[in-house]
Image 1 (cartoon, one colour):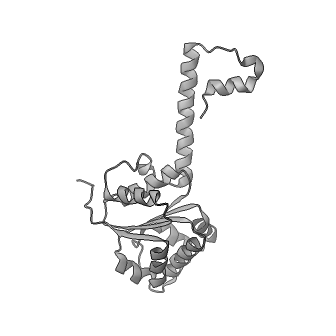
Image 2 (image 1 turned 135 degrees about the horizontal axis):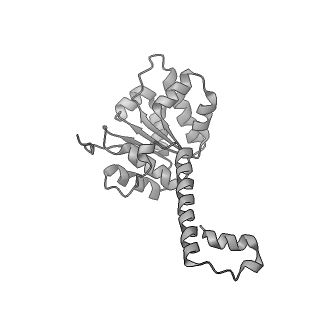
Length: 207
C-alpha cells in the first residue's frame, strides 16, 4: 500500500515531485493512513460476515485446530470438516483462515436453516457460489425428521464439490453422527475432496 503523501504527489502531477512534507505533515499523513487501514480492514471483516468477537483471531494460536488448518492451507486442499466439542477453537480457527484469505463467506448453521425454511434462495445461492465458504456448527440445528434440511446440505456440498470450491465446516458431530444426519454421499464427497478431522482437544474457555 502506497503512502498517502506519495499518492498526493502522483495526483498533482509532475510539478509536485519536489514537494517536501514537514515532519508534522508526515505524521498527519501517517495517522490518516492508519485510520484508513483500520476502516478498510473492518469493512473486509463485515463483508466476510465474521462475528465481531472473532475479528482479532489469527492462526498463530497454539491449538490442534490451528495446526490442522495450517496443514490444510499448505496442502492447498479444498474441503475440511473439523469435529470437536465446544471451546476447542474450531470457530476461531476457521475465522482466522477466512481473514487471512481476505475473501469468502462465514455462515452459522442457524442462518442456513432460516434461509431454507423461509425459501431465501438468493442467500442459499450465495452459499453455493462464494469462493470460500465457512459453515459453523453444522449439526447443532434441530434435526429435521422430514430430511428436507439434510437434502439442502447435500445440495450445497455437491454444488461446491462439483465446482471445486474451498469449503470449511465445523461440527459437534463425529463422523458416524455426521453420516447419520447428512447421508453417505456427503461423507463420500468429503473423503474424495478433503478431510474429516476429529479433535479431542479440551475447551480453552474458563469460568
